[in-house]
Image 1: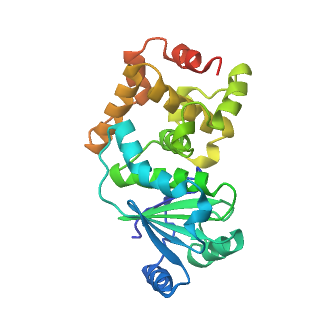
Image 2 (image 1 turned 90 degrees about the vertical axis):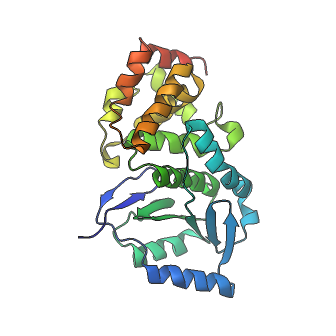
Length: 268
């Protein structure tokens, strides 16, 4: 039986018989890097293979160096010494051709992918104006899954959306906020119960992603009890204890939870 493979692509999550990157291809890329066709960089816990100089990516190198510590400190989550491989293609055509050749069943219309199989964690992306955001997003997935056996779909995406922006923008300048303001005004935010019931990305709408981010922001920057429950929830998963429902845990600690979250974002 083929091992399950998780494929994340700017919010795509799958479990099933996806084809992972063949080991032979990894060796080819490594040899290619050594010959100068691809540049190879070690950026903290990330091994980056790139068809173009990383200096073209702005703050990405520094952001990747800080990301594991930011994630670990924010969630009080120990991260194993896992190497995440990041492959950066020169353009969309090269990226899509590679996916068609090595992972024909993977989603082809995504700007970036995180692929997890067994102890392998790989991120694929191509040069475009969203590259740094895409890579931070997918690398957040990689780090979470290197430490946790599972992460609820909505929470995984909410955390990746939170950490996908530069550190200085996470509190007040995430692009998700603009859409959230209108979601709140029009009364179309996803309920917490509906978020927890999501099991496939096909069922997720843009509002779901924004609401997931909104709850993560509330847990990080709202009442301290909210962060405590998030930390405890993930600790239970890491220790392989049944974590229960995060919504129920928060409701026990914070009566009137939905109103508190709405108040947290009002006037932003």
